[in-house]
Image (cartoon, rainbow, N blue to C red; front, side, top):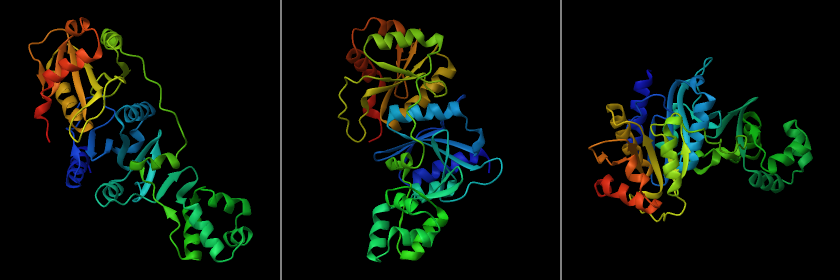
Amino acid sequence: MSRDALVGNLTAMLQDAGFAVSDRCAIRPKSFDLAARRGEDLVLLKVLSNIDAFDAATGAEMRRLGAYLNATPMVIGLRTRDEDLESDVVYFRHGVPVFAPDTAMGLFVEGVPPLVYAAPGGLYVNIDGDLLADEREEQDMSLGQLANELGVSRRTVSKYEDGMNASVEVAMRLEEMFDAPLTAPVDVLEDGADEVRDAEPTPEDPDADPDDEPMVTVMTRVGFDVHPTTRAPFKAVSEDHEASDDADAWDVREDTILTGHSAFTRAAEKRARIMASIGDVTRTRSVYFVDRSKRESVDGTAIVEREEVEKMRDAEELRELIRERADVEERPA
C-alpha cells in the first residue's frame, strides 16, 4: 500500500470513528501528517510505510508538540526493514508509540487498546499485580510455589505483584494457571505508554531560525513563551500562561497560538490554511506574521504585519487582534 493510500485510509477510519481530522500537512519537512480529535483525545499522527524512516529529530519534535498541545504523538506504519508490524502490538521509536493500521483500528474504532508492547528482548504485557496477588493468595499458594511453577525466582514473582511487566509467555502461563485475566492494556490515549517505555523528559526546544528571531523577540516582549519548531507547518507554538483557559467544546484556547512567519507568498498562504485546519482540531488560534499583506486572514489564520505587533504593549492586545481577524465565530460547532 502506498503512503498516500495509507493516509487516506487512516483519515477515513478516524472520521468514521467520530474524530475531527485536520487537512493533511502536505508540506516538507513535516513532523506529523494529521491532527485528530474526539472529545478530549487529541492525537498527532505520522504515517509511514516503513517506520525505520522515523528519525530521532522527528520523534523529538512530535514529543515536544504533544507536550505543548496536550496531544498524544503516534506513528502508524506497515513494516520495518525486516518484517511487517504485528497486529495488537505497540512498538516505540524515539519515545513515540508506533502501531500497525489494524492496531489503530482496534484502538480508535473498537475502543480496544493493545495488550502487548515490543521492547528489547521481545514482547511484553502489563501485569495487574494486585489481581495476581489476590489470585495466588486465594489458592493458598506461596511466592516460592508460584516461582517454581513458572521457573523463575521468588523475587521475580514478587516484582510481578509489585507491577513489573512480564513476557507474553509468562503472562499466558499465569492466566492459564489461575484461569483469570491478569493483563492490562497499553492505553496510550490515557498516558498508558508512559508505563511501558523509559521515562524521558520532553526534549529541549531547538534554536529559532535566524530569520524568525525578530518574530520570537516580538512575541516574547508582549508576554508569550515561544517554542520554535523545525519540522511543523508552523514556525513556533507560542504560549501565554497568563491567559484564561475556560474554553468550551469548540471555543479555542486563549493560551496557545500556532505561529508562522515569512513573506506572504503562495507557499505562506498554503501554510496558513494548514495551520487553520490544525487549529480547528487542536482548538488553538493561529497567526501568520508577514512584512506586508493586503489580507487579514486565511481560512481562520490571522495575518498580522510585523510592524503592527511591534507597537503592541501586551499579550491581550495581540490576542484581541487575532480574534478579530480569525473569524472564530465561523468555526464548526
